[in-house]
Length: 232
Image (cartoon, rainbow, N blue to C red; front, side):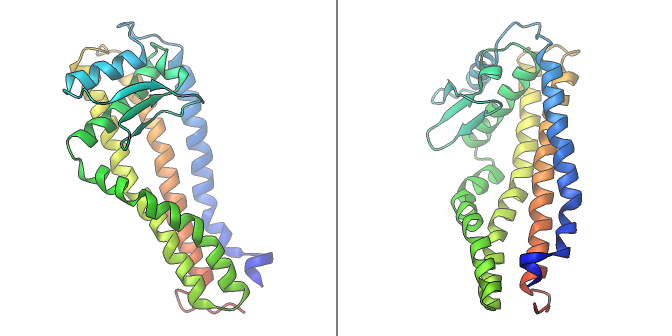
């Protein structure tokens, strides 16, 4: 069976794999570079995040330290903004950009930004779809159950939808971050372009993830026979 031994459709993923590798290198190198440059404000990422929330009259979200490297995220269910040590404790241009970006997600939640709400709603569906997709596809191909394989592909499409919705959410959060840093005076006009580079590099990782998901979906559709192909 081609799926088990040799699958020529894997070549479809090559552009996404290359982009993902470049994006990972770009975000790590850019963050490392601007982590060495302190912001003139002298504020840490945690302080800036709290200030931005206060500037937007958001008082019910905690800012906490979380372990790991670049594990920064906003938890909308518990209303907690979690920052990694290299962001929470640092006053670098990179740290302020990441902290402000996560604060941007809090602002999205607070003011009902539609793509953010959609992404939050489909998280459980996307998680289940990702877990079921490949087992269903595999079983369908092994036992010649084409419909079962196609159900697996449909399940995977939930993960693709999540990635597609994530793109505008992340770009909007970065835009809000830059605006908040400028308006609040946390960055000077000369510092802003450097922080913008950090956020642009991070955004590229989401572009790579979306491309990977879309091409993977196309590949799975080919394998399962969505376009009329029947596996021999």
